Length: 65
Image (cartoon, rainbow, N blue to C red; front, side, top):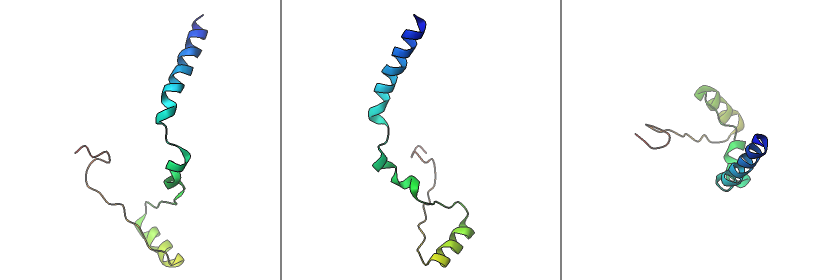
C-alpha cells in the first residue's frame, strides 16, 4: 500500500515538475566549451582566431545582492 502511494506521489511530482524543466532548445548554452582559466582561454582564442566572450559580473548570480 505504501509503495503504491509512493509511486503515485512520485508520478504526480514528475508531472508537476515537467512543465518547468528547461527544454533541449533552451540548453544549447551547455554545448559551448566554456573556459574558466583566462590564460588558457586567451591561448585557445589566439590559436583558433576566434574572439573571446567575457561573462563578468559583480554579486550573486541570481541578482540577489
